[in-house]
Image (cartoon, rainbow, N blue to C red):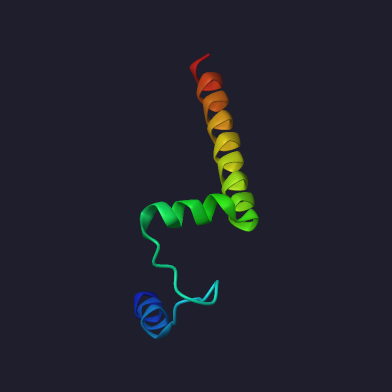
Length: 67
């Protein structure tokens, strides 16, 4: 039943419109948009920080388990 409910939600959802207009600038244009926009840049920095903290914690746990 959960799979059917998930499929139903995905099949009936509409794409989110984050920005008005079309963005067909290609790969480099898209990358530039992600780096130049302060909102996107903030989210990218936050994701990298979270991944870094998770990696450091994982290494510490692995070292503690070796002793």
